[in-house]
Image 1 (cartoon, rainbow, N blue to C red):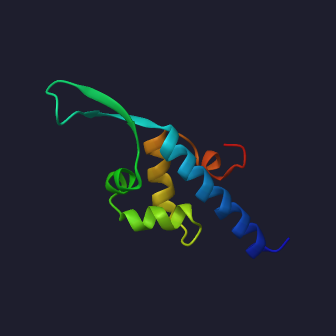
Image 2 (image 1 turned 45 degrees about the horizontal axis):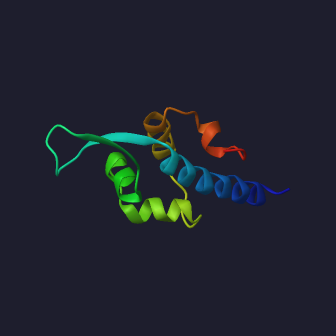
Length: 93
């Protein structure tokens, strides 16, 4: 297998895994309609983009394997989701 083929497979897994993590992981947000009420919600593409300081389109491109994240962005994702880079790249998420 060539480097290019390996790179494509790894990034394909990354795109699938980031989407799964985004939908599985939740965070607590105050309900704007009810004072003092909090709710557990999954990250939307926009929520994730805001947390990382990037655009929603960038997250969409990752999930659809159109663009690759930088190493810094991978590390930021790992901190946010409390996982390792290997977790983002493995095939069994």
